[in-house]
Length: 446
Image 1: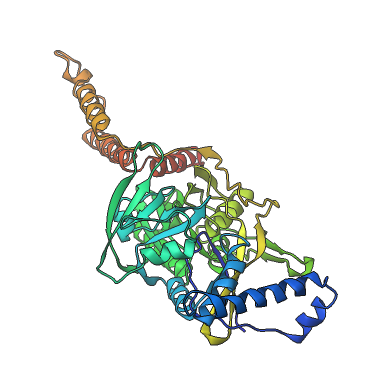
Image 2: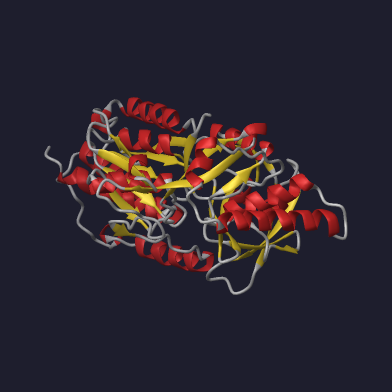
């Protein structure tokens, strides 16, 4: 049966049908186990029969077994679960980059549903959902006590329908409601743009299209700049990226590394371990890099940032990442369902397991909260300060030592600097990363 590995942060699948498989080798291995295991299985059978015969209403036997299997898997960790045929199909579609929903990746923390990250350009992101938000109610119905799968079921619905979620956010005194219109989520896994002389690569998820989008976008921006010599570096923006396919995380890391280990996975048995190494070739020829991360950067994002950090290939800027250091194997089952089982932990090249710890940035830079009133006051003060200069003073000496071309060049450079400064108001962390690369460029030999 075909298997593939996932390095993603959320557990959002539910089960409808189930099939079981018992292999002869497995029975042989289990024969040496204490008989108490079989006694417990007999107990399970007794309870199942009692429910079938004596429950106040007639029960669906298939759903009973499904609930038992789903409970067994979900008791292991937040990321192991049974996938019904419908959920397995939806997951395959999601890894291809198009699916229906709100556009949020969620997990469960101490019984509450927590947003790992909203995905760029999705209804949830546009409605103002943020990484770290706790969702307490859906359309007025409390999520407390529900499994993650049940909570996600409440959030699903037809494209075009409205959902109201109640959110608790750190720093906000009271819970508040957010209205979202469900839509078909079409993700462009990686986008590229140029800010000044810096190429910014925004990677929102790791699906089948991530590396292709990244490579094509990077090439387009380099060509538009007139060649690699005309850019000063690359910012790889992995903020609020919840992860995805392990294979894509390896490809993205390899894109900027010439050699060395990218990541290793270690399972229960030593022989189950895998090591993935970089191949020769760097898409930007060794140009400086900055990687941006935050608390919504999880799993596959942490593989990439950890690899580039350990190899000293990039400076990691932002805030501590989510801290999901486990790998799930999706195992197809009969009846088109699947089982998602945590089978390994992953380690960065230096041997770090970031499970529950996250990747710590080299330079901690928090994104300041937006305060419109304070911004208006600051803008007014800054404008007042900028309104007067030496040239405004009565009788000020003129500068006749510069030619018109030199004056024009100075004015153009000033305009570029002021344009770059505007970015700090919109995205302080990104502006900081770009400034780092400008510093590299200023120190580079001419």
